[in-house]
Amino acid sequence: MPQAATKPVPIPDDLSAPFFDGARDRKLMLQHCSACDSWSFPVRERCPHCFAAKLTWRQASGRGTLYTFTVMHQVMNPGFASAVPYNVAQVDLDEGVRMVSNVVGTGNDALRIGMKLEVVFEDVSDEIRIPKFRPVAG
Amino acid sequence: MSNQPKGAIAGLGVTPMGKIYGRRSVDFAAEAIALALDDAGLQKSDIDGLLINANLSGDMDVRAQMTLGFENLSLVNVMSAYGSTAGSMMQYACMAIREGLAKTVVLVYADAPLSASRGAGQSYAGPHRYPLGGMAGLRAAYGNFGANAEYAMAARRHMHLYGTTPEQFGTIAVGQRKWAQLSPWAQMKQPMTMEDYYNSRFIAEPLRLFDCCLVSNGAVAVIVTSSERARDLRQKPVNVLGYAQCAPGDNLRTDRHPAVETGAKRSGEMAFRMAGITLDDIGTCQLYDCYTYTVLVTLEDYGFCAKGEGGAFVADGKLGPGGALPTNTGGGQLSGYYMWGFTPLSEAVVQARGQGGERQAPRNDFVLVSANGGILNFHSTIILSAQASGG
Ligand SMILES: [Zn+2]
Image (cartoon, rainbow over all chains, first blue to last red; front, side, top):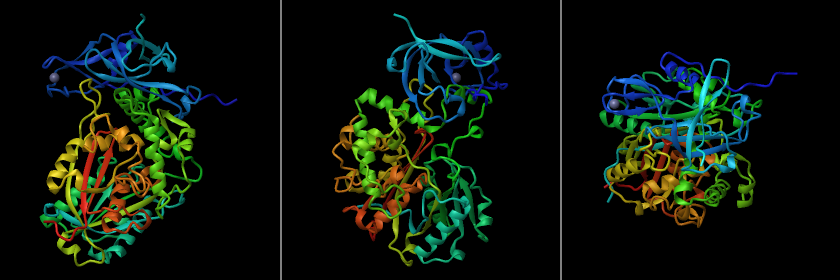
């Protein structure tokens, strides 16, 4: 039998390594600018707000709200053939950055814009773990 | 009264569109340019400028100049701001002509992503398109591929904020299919009812198949020259009265909302000011419609209705044949053909000249063209008019 296609696994590079290293330790690491005290996403060398080269990696709260989402039906990559319908979500983190992720721990029908979310981590290979989000209980 | 033109469109070439297999993008480009030269009554040797729109397949680069056999061009480049490029190409062509860098400039978009062995949905997919290195790999790991998911999320946000409905998106799709049935160039001729719209499968909720643009093999070429020179050529000149770009930035900050407040707002304001006209002067709109939602949000941002009222604005079918604001009269990208910003631009030329036949809009003094790129990250606006005088 042919082996089922697997979902794509990110390959960290020098710039993104702290993000993926953090995720392995179940920490959501984001870049923070010490010049203007703002956070940014995804990764870069220079702050997109004030343009200072003063970005350092800090652990984010991992809390946010659901900004918007979709439920994907089209299979754009064979690794997701058995995953459809799955959600893709934009999460507004309390730090002021918006990141794309998946919401887990609830059905797609229960997704509501504005719902409170918190980060969880999911293994996608032996080496790589990625942040996802689940509804905050209560 | 409108202001002096920045330049004029003297020729238009549109090749057959759709599932035409076995031809390269550059060969479609050659056909479109030949058609545009015939249309304008010009020879290839009259062309001294060539601006190529980098296409979605990535196979149109500056070497096309050699394949096309041009000589001694004084202006040549490949331009890319994704789907919004048509507007920036028009700006740079007109500026170059006014500056004396070139006299007659060809703008061309060509693409040939469809092949007999591959479905349209896979045309722009495949592993090579989704890099796994660094943070780009994170997107792939979440299953966030291509534009469908991102536009679906934008549409969902609008629905949440303003109560916009699938029925309203469907009205846009159904209206444009009616237009397509009147256009000899359109790919999709079968009638579409609202029931058909609802029965089309979900691609990325809330977007159904009929909310999404087509995929096309083909090419469009437009010949730009000065308004004065265009008067001596075969076709009635279509003057370029205003143009502007706005790139609103990414959506990765919680204080930014390009998904629901697009670059159409600023670029529209600038283009209308430059043209010296108002929204009321516009007889027909040719709006970038990669998705039904794009039409709706663009109408809002140009100010045809208030923010959030786009759904109610389109609900009476005013964009379709016989409606008060004929829009995407060639069927657009949803039902006509998908040539990035050259879809709206090409139909705008037809409408401004009054050559639309059965699909001709009754008022065509001023035609509004929008082009949009990325995930609502780039926007350009062009205002065209075939009125004899610009002033
Ligand atoms: Zn900063």
